[in-house]
Amino acid sequence: PISFEKVEQGPPDAILGVKTRFLADDSPESVNVSVGAYRDAQGKPLVLEVVRKAEKAILEDASRNKEYLGIAGDVKFRQATQEFCFGADAKSVKEGRVATVQALSGTGALRVGAEFLATHFAGTKVYIPNPTWGNHFKIFGNAGLETAKYTYLNPATRGLDFEGMMKDLEQAPAGSVVVLHVCAHNPTGVDPTAEQWQKIVDLLTERQLLPFFDSAYQGFASGDVDKDAYAVRLFESKGQQMMVAQSYSKNMGLYGERVGALNVVCPSAGACARVMSQLELVIRPMYSNPPRHGAAIAALILTDPKLREEWKVELKGIVDRILAMRKGLREAIEATGAPGDWSFITDQIGMFTFTGLSADQVASMEKNYHIYMPSNGRISVAGLTSDKLEHVAKAIRSVL
Ligand code: PLP
Image (cartoon, rainbow, N blue to C red; front, side, top):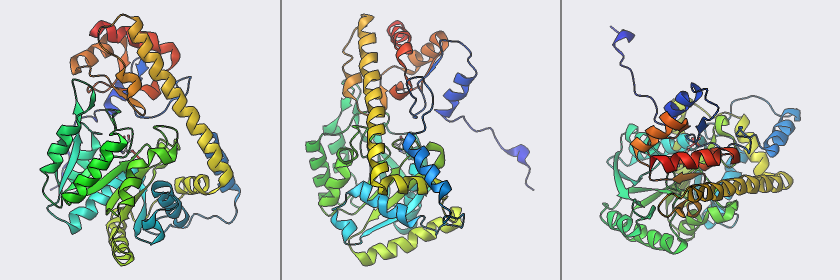
């Protein structure tokens, strides 16, 4: 018989567990730089002004209702998100070769993609960068796919180990899937250069490896949504088949609304229709159909020229604050006389800086200085505020 007494305690989530400890710490010095969510200059969560405006317009639009969406989600959102990802001139979009389904943000898109691969391409091996966002291994593994790591970071330089990466991917069996972060790699903040992306696309084509892009930070890295889509658009322009999971958690600050999409770029419109039917078969027994509200917000912002322009300005403000915090943190650490080269803080891209601090050093930061970050030493720069920079810098200096 079923007795829930038999259920064992599971381990806390590596990052959400840190947040719980932070909330229990009432020291005025406490700083939470663990969670991958943007905070404003006062350290508070931010709802974009453009999101408020879109929500208001949605509420006032009497023609909208709360009926179920189709299995694949909001049609207007799906069209807009394709264009946002691949660009208005993308051949695959124009030729109707991209199967797009709305998803429960980036995580849900990855999971639906993983289920689809496991169903139709059983035995596929999925190569994931080392290190990566912690959820990748579980998402693909839980879908029943075999996962393997490929070299990504060179710990000594805190930069990309491009040779190591290429060497590992050269050895991947044909037909494997390669997970690639489109930009602002999490947790390292290290991205390939344009030239390196060219070499990656050539290698994947030659070795018959399928790219599965994770696009969680489009616009959030440089502030320019087109520039940040470079890698996906390069692959698309080469006629590559691929999968892309998109998230609007960070770039629209829609975290809890769970807005995202899965795109599968197919070789023909016929294949696209068949893939679409199969994606719906994955979704229907999982959660039936996605929620309306967040997708309606994103669709409106993406398609209304005025809102889109306002979003651009707000996004730029967010990116500028993150860049200012990077500069501030680097200068504050250098001012302590800490040994070593701290230029990586301003070189790395996106909301995180990968400090290279050990798990022991991280534990000491938490115990002695009330500074909370995951044990891999990743600092969410977007969680920093000017008044905390000196405290964080001094703590880092003291644990070195
Ligand atoms: N992929 C990467 C690399 C991320 O960093 C995140 C969030 O931190 C996600 C995907 C998924 O986030 P969400 O499910 O909120 O879209």
